[in-house]
Image 1 (cartoon, protein in one colour):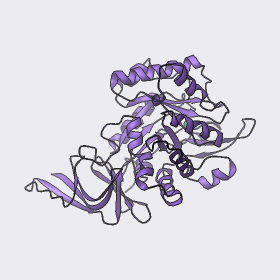
Image 2 (tube, protein in one colour):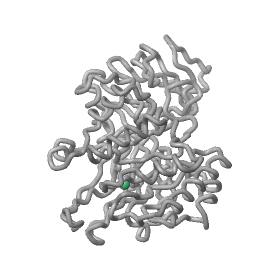
Image 3 (cartoon, rainbow, N blue to C red):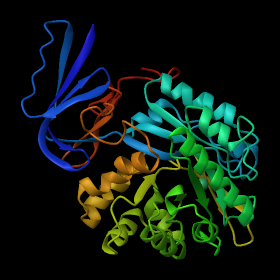
Image 4 (cartoon, rainbow, N blue to C red):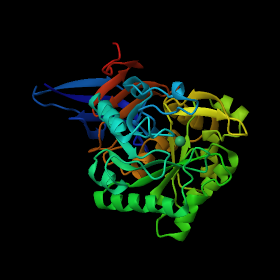
Length: 397
Ligand code: ZN
């Protein structure tokens, strides 16, 4: 028998705050948002209720940059990072993820990335991918960026192409502009974003290549989603300028922010978003991603490998919570960075909002602590009372 679900009396953030409402979920979609909703299907459909008192209902999180297949390897083969499991995502509120390959585009390739994305989709969440890796020329699954984006359902753009980094292929302006042009045209022809997800490294060249394409060609700033914008203060200054000119910038969350802020000049996400808002830049112009399962290698000034950590998807909610609790940014604004903003810049239809007709991807957060209580993906309860209830194929109940 089909099941309908009603979430009762939660504070609904669509992400705009809509007041205390009920949410009716039917066939994996949000059927209605309103007060005192009733659902009577004459016994044909079982109706279940979830009590939403004391909860904030926000859209399921969209992680626009995660190494679902694992990444890393910068310290040798034993430093390749593990794949993401369903639990790594749903237990952190993520109901939509965009997979990417990082430094190593040989040991990991598009065939394996797409296989992994399909696997996670089979397990209950929504998945997409960027074609390519750090490297230029971009290593695609078919013979071109255009064909990958146009003909492979899950591929929504190119990435993460690395610039301003000692691990980058050091693309020329012409090479970089060609990638952007191909992604843009493929996006237009297929109704997708055709976004170029650009890994920004630590070098003083910052986002110069992106700026040059925007200034010297007809390709607009909106075609790019530069990531790791908060990795150092000087880079972040330029990225704010890019956002001011109509670009969207992607903060990389950090599970261990205190540590990173003390050893280098990484910009704390909540402080960066506060600055962006104070400059009068639209709250639509930022996203936060986790870089989950990506490596966090530490190099010395000579570029020699010192050690490695791993990105964690748990940083997303942590960063949003910090925005609210430390910088007094309203939840409805902060949460846009992991819901409606990535949905919009990546053109993910049916995602990022709690509104009728949208996919029923919903997180219930405890109002007082902003911790995760319930996660629903495409209408299916994945996490309940903070515990995983739907398990990945090799996860134990
Ligand atoms: Zn990266």
